[in-house]
Image (cartoon, rainbow, N blue to C red):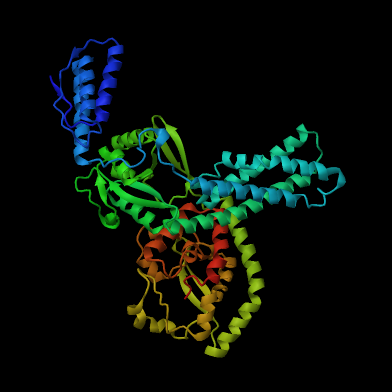
Length: 568
């Protein structure tokens, strides 16, 4: 059987030579394979005619057997097909072959060096502040504390690096970064304490506590500023990672849409790869060009300049996913695989082995028990304090409403609570007295999607009411609902009965928890969000509720109110 290398790339010929050498060393029985050398010069081969003739001559000199011949023919056929489908362009830079030559994914070196330097300065400032404590400035401990602080400065960046704080993927998520920072600070304080024992230096315990608190506070503030700078750079397109997306289904479309809308994540999808014969883009991802099949992904990466690959796992088979991961990581290309889940908090997901499969375990959410009891105590305490503090504001607002639009300061309305139970919600009246009877006339001017009704310029709102809405003062009486137990400080928006009737089965899941005065939807663009965002944000809260989540939303509420973020 004759084997021709016509039109085959130089890489395929070299692969054949190496394989034959290995089989010959193994001492297996072989027979020679004649090779046709009528090779014309071809830009796709990467070898000149003399080079190919020399390679062909070496191939003749190597023994082979039938199995080897079949494997070689298959490899050459695949290489020829790939060269025909994805023609190579003349190389103008580095090739992707080899892990040592892969394109760097992460921070540019200049930015990483800047972050290391700024972190070190923040640590040094924190250590300096700790020395200002009276307990540390005593003559007996000041010199020892100062020496330990000075000696420990180079150690802190090493601890940050060990905890992954200089990796790009940890900077975008505040909670993950703070967790790693806490670990670093604890290790740093233990290191300082251990160093004092080794050097036999006496320091005050309160100084060690001050070191931890001051270093954590200053580095956390510095990292918050850094995160905002990086977010703006990414949003402006100055720090983007070029990625290929594998897949051509609804999940791939949603991934592309999310990455295009969330530029602060730092991803730029340069193309789509799919084994779908009609893979020319669809749906939301139609703006991303189709570049070829998964068999040619390495060639596509070289031509497109991508540095990593994002795989929509529901769009490809298990065999294709394993082959892609194996081939790409072998060449030093970063691979990110979707989990086929969305809107699941990563703190609930644990990766563990189950036989040959890496399995993601999702922890259940507990809305009852001690966490629910603590949430209730927290709600009552904060709502009670809030009512006392807001009492002068409420009295002033009530007087303004009474003077400008007559009696009836409080507005009472039936809303749907936990498990579908109706309750009466309290608000300061911001509309004319007969506002409910005027609603049918305004339905055609509804600016919100779905069953909700919102108007940016609702004619039923009074002049005082408009001010109360912009400042969210009209919602302060809902603190009474919190004390009574009908509502929580944080939770989904309390819906009207006629809205709840139109809900889908998925949206009814929000009834598993108490409605709240504030929530994900309110702090994420309260008026501009669509019904889809409204559903997604509320269900995310219900599915991933935690005490920390409540604290984060409460912390975001005041800035959202001050920005008048969608208040109407």
